[in-house]
Amino acid sequence: MAIAAIMVTTVTVATMAIKGKIKASPLKITANGKNYGKPDHVDSDISFSRARSLAVNYGLVGYQALPPGIAKNVARGKPLPPGIAKKTLPASMINDLPYYPGYEWRAVGDDLVLVALSTAIVTAVINGVFD
Image (tube, rainbow, N blue to C red; front, side, top):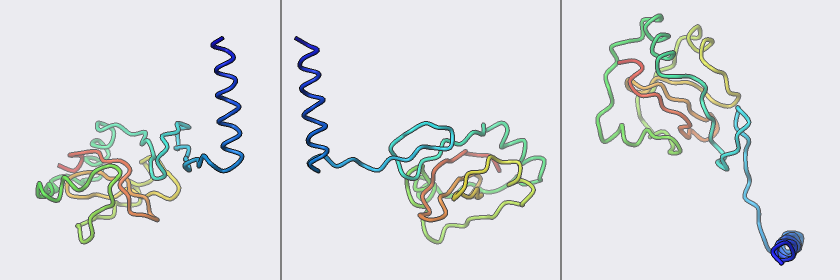
């Protein structure tokens, strides 16, 4: 009985999809093969300790944290606030960070941030790397 109900449901959903009554949302596979259903989501493959050791090696420490009101707007899934002080990282440090096509690593306050180039959406934040 349960198998028959599943088969009927599957056929009904498939028929509705063919007729255009169900719209599929666009999904994107992330860099590591996981599907999160978010168009601007990349799962970064770097830990705080690795990012911090790179910052220390390149002398990029002592940065000031952002004011609390601005810092809360630098969050994954949100666009990078306009006018925020973003620092480009040295090319040698960028080469040591994971590379994702269409994304760029930036220093924002004392945080390491991965930003989508086309939309300026923040996709990863590692807090306190440049503290």
